[in-house]
Amino acid sequence: MAGFSRWTRQRDTSISSQSSVLKKGDLREPDTLVATGFGVGLIPGPPGTYGSLLGVLIWWIAFAHAPLIVQFVGAGALVVAGTWLLQRLCARRGLGDDPAIVLDEVAGVWLTLACLPSDVFVMAAGFLLFRLFDIFKPWPVSWADRRVQGGFGVMLDDIVAGILAAIAAHIVLWLLSQAGFAVSA
Image (cartoon, rainbow, N blue to C red; front, top):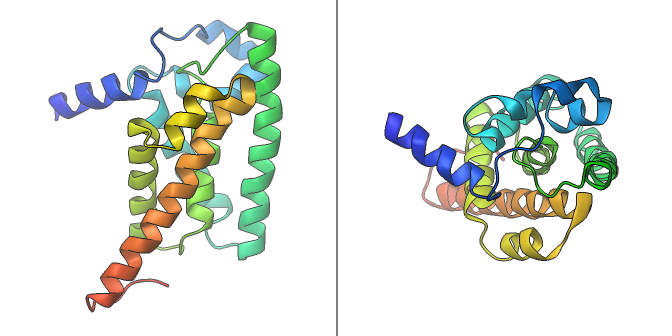
């Protein structure tokens, strides 16, 4: 397990060649507090995974059993407000995609979960697929990560990863149903 933890930490922080510019003292600033997931992004280890887990937890509590329209409005509102906040924070602090910023992971995993049934196993699969797309960054995630700058750029690669994870999850659910497995619709 230690090898896996070391591997995920290496892969998770490889999105930035630098360590986090943000520090615990910065949490006094409201935009930094929110962008770091109330400090979750500053916990040692893989901050993107921790931020995604925070997103799943908040989703489960607030949206998992809400009507579909409420789920999409919640995810969309987070994307819009989060992009605005990250643009402001990145401009003010001169930041790129700082590893401690995890609001983008929260938004990305919310987009994945909004497209999936509220089944704990399906949601876990959605989380795992989101993390795979976010860590390995296949095209077009990699394009968004490299080409789009500022707060929108920080958010965009995770939005794309969230959408791709939702598509992949639906393909897996369809394949399982075709194979005769009872799956949530």
